[in-house]
Length: 130
Image 1 (cartoon, helix red, strand yellow):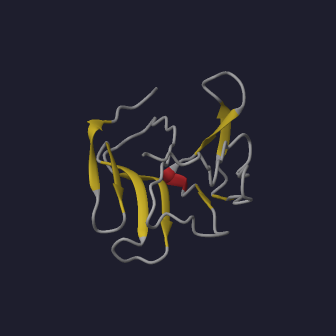
Image 2 (tube, one colour; image 1 turned 90 degrees about the vertical axis):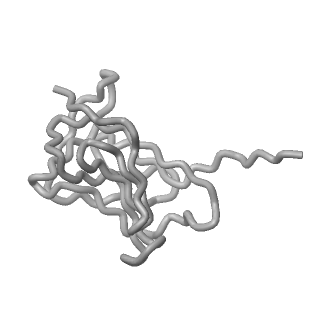
């Protein structure tokens, strides 16, 4: 028989004019004064981060438990200035050593995922939205 696990969301950040997390109190702290813009849906908001201004959201409450389990991380990004460099989307580091530092980035216009020193490159080339 096959058992299907129940959906259990550990964290959700809608970035609707703040960095509050809705499920477990993993609220973020804004750095570099990011701005908010109207959602592409026409309601709500979306956070606008500018790498050149060192803008990011930091969540230091806890390490999300990802070891020895399946997990899904989902993010909606709307790149407007890809220059072929590296742009962080999500990261969590217990230690900067192999298998202890999860990161999702855009690197050279492709998505990358890795646990430090074992990255996997996506096949799709990202394009800018203007």
